[in-house]
Picture 1 (cartoon, rainbow, N blue to C red):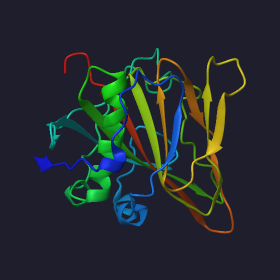
Picture 2: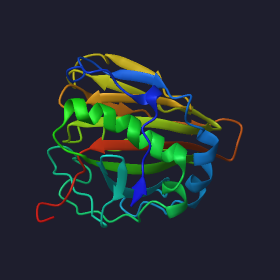
Picture 3: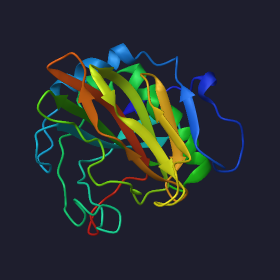
Amino acid sequence: MLNLSKPTEFTKPEANCLASYVLEMLTAINVDALKPSFTRLPEDPYLEGHYRFRRLSHFQVMGNRLIQMPHRRLFQSKQYNPLLGDVIREYAELEDELIQLEDFQRLIWEFFQFCQLCSDSNEIAVHQIRTTASSQQLGNPAPEGIHRDGVDLVGIFSVDRYGIDGGETHLYKTKTDPPAFSKVLNPGEFLVFRDDQYFHYTSPVKTVDVEQGTRDVFVLTCPGLFPPDA
C-alpha cells in the first residue's frame, strides 16, 4: 500500500466523460526516471518473433492511497483480440522499484482523474511494454490490428523512442473510416480516449541507424481485463 499524493496541477475540473480524445504533454513527469525499468522487462511469451517485452500490474485508488492488487491474469475475448483472444495470459508484475517512484504514481493519478469521469471502476491496469525492431525484423506494437480493448478508458503514455521510425498511433471511429487521430507519441505525451468511442492501432516500427531500436510505453486501462472466473 502506498500513499498517492494529489498534485493540484493534475486535478481535472468537474465535467462529463470525454467528448473526444485528450492528448497531453505531462511535463511534471520525468520520463528519464522511468526508462531503466524497461531494460529489465521479460519477453512476451505469447508472440512469435521475440520483439515484445511486457509486465502488468493492477491498482486501486482509495482516497489518497494507491493499492497494488493481488496478481491477476489478462484475458480478452476473440471479439476484441482476434490474435490472442480467449487466451489467459500471465505476465510478471511491475518492479517494486518502479512502483515506488513518484513519477510513476503521478501517471496513475493523472489517468485516474479521467477514470472518475468515464468509469464506475476504481481499478486500473498498467501494462509496461517495450517493442523492439532490428535490421532483420520490424516491431509490431499492435499485432492484433485495428481493435478495441473492451474497457471503459484507455491511456497510452510514451516514455521513450530510440533509433526507430514508425510507431504512429491512430484512432478510428469505425474500422473502415480514415483515422480521426494520427500521431507519433513522443516521450512525455499521454493520449487518453474512450474505448467505446474509438478503435485504435499503432503502426510497426523499424530501426534507423542502430542495430536495435525500441519503443517504450505504458498502456493504462480502466478497468482491467480479467478471465471470466477471476
